[in-house]
Length: 185
Image 1 (tube, one colour):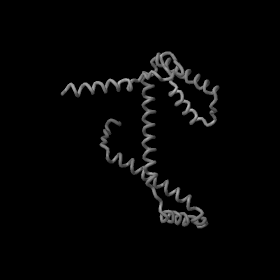
Image 2 (cartoon, rainbow, N blue to C red):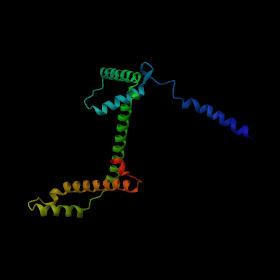
Image 3 (cartoon, rainbow, N blue to C red):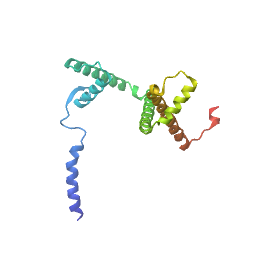
């Protein structure tokens, strides 16, 4: 009984292994730079990112070649930096850690901001209250209907900022934080 289960299982595994291989035999190489192989997929992904970042970038055969040369230059410099073990220096690692942390923080704040933006609703009553406060400070203020959209945006932004701050305050409130003041002296 055990062999009847194991035999088909081994057969299935042997069929799946070639699919899991990292070295796909049909990968198309654009350039080999020492031991590094730049695949067509990688080249196209980098090119697509460049097109997104630089609106003036015109895609021609010549610019493709120039872009490839730029990738080759960067890869050669990276390889040289690794040979010099610059990637293992403490200062480099700390810089990468700081960049990673700040990117992670920005991403979580962006994510939470999007969530909050979807939930924030501004009522006509809130807009009217805000307008009335403004009108008390400046009686020459134009009519509400002229400022309606502007006030709505302002109130929505104030709510969004308040909710984001509340979320951050809750993170701290729900965390286990211990401060040792003697270590700060």
